[in-house]
Image (cartoon, rainbow, N blue to C red):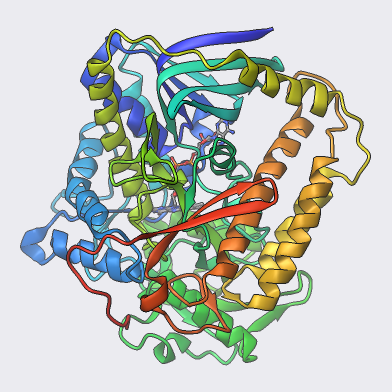
Length: 582
Ligand SMILES: Cc1cc2nc3c(=O)[nH]c(=O)nc-3n(C[C@H](O)[C@H](O)[C@H](O)COP(=O)(O)OP(=O)(O)OC[C@H]3O[C@@H](n4cnc5c(N)ncnc54)[C@H](O)[C@@H]3O)c2cc1C
């Protein structure tokens, strides 16, 4: 039996972006509007709770910060691939978001005079990252959830795994989902749909991302014929803790931490003499990899990993406890190292998906011709409105989640008012039946005749860690594509061993791994096509940025084994691209 539920708004994802969208719809239309928030994990377990270091916004123009400076830092950080009009919109809406959160109860860290404190972050030329110790995302999620609970007329569906987005006649219709606790299928019909499914960090093994960041929304979008934008740009954060990959926040360098190599040298002086450790992430990650490749790294024999050191000892125990308590706790618990007395082993780690679902600056989802898919928005990390271009600055993501949620929520409210009398159009029966048949007959009913899905997943992650990393080459990318192609066909024959209905995590692993393989293949394919180096995408065989040929966004839709590609211009409204120096 397929249950059909009708809502005005269906939001897939309960991270910062999903919750902020729900709040904005509710602030504007109150109880008259019905909202479903669907999440494959418990609401408060979305990856957003792990955000540590801060949220960027211009709060103190009288001290020298400005919208223009925030916009310029972001655009330069993006290696000029950001859409400049989208960046301006975000930086102008950012301060109000920080203050709204404060009003809703957010315990921002404070200056001695009681005003909101800010810390330096990589690539920002003013200390504008607002923070709550080093647990910023956790407190932001608590605050948004608390606010949302003031409203009636919304339902949360935790542990409900969405399997497809239904778009028909150019319009959003519904999503199909599997209720993990019962094993039954649910169709959520909505007048408006929001994809807030986060990033795809788990296509890599060494990653800061929680297990749930499997890029489902991106893969589902492509299956619905929706293009992804700029997928070749994956951010590697410079300081992943060795060996686990847990993030050591950039806040640690913001508070004064140094990076040193095997001979104790602060090597960033050779790569970014001015900004040093606070250059943007792509620059610092490349510097660390160069040190390692040129033999000035350290080596962990047990895990076969090369690394450099992050030294926080000079900050002293009191500052560590006050400003970076989570960093200290993480290093002690997960590496057996107390940063108050020993430097921390770190190396670049997969951290953010700059690309995502193709949207305009208002986060409306666009098809490959640039036409709005009526009733559909994408927000947060799943979306690519092109704020971050080829490289995101730290603390710009959580603020994008808030701003995009607010923008989408406000438009959804208008959209619903204008179309008040229209009911949600039902998706055609055949689409729902096809999805049902695929999951229950094909996947649960099928016999496994191939390798375990877990082995396939590990192989994919190793390939991505090896070939689609900080430094890329044509040979490596071709090799990765060939192997990923094989893994995709193996995954088609890998069925869940567990055939039960209730909490079938084996089935979820199959669905997620297939999605990740689609995303990994698309990232690699687009990285192969882009024959230049820009931001986080660095080709050893094309080491220069090539504005003449490549100052443009890529669009991609994986369809079977083909990737349909197209390009579109970057919106350049204020600053012409110049060479990036730090
Ligand atoms: C360790 C870490 C630290 C970070 N620190 C910072 C920081 O200090 N500052 C900053 O600006 N950024 C930071 N970032 C980045 C930032 O936290 C994320 O980009 C942002 O929180 C993403 O939020 P989101 O709402 O888009 O998605 P997420 O919080 O990732 O939530 C995704 C949601 O989608 C749901 N979902 C996904 N697939 C499905 C499906 N198939 N069916 C149903 N539900 C689904 C999930 O259950 C979840 O609720 C950090 C990231 C990490 C990993």
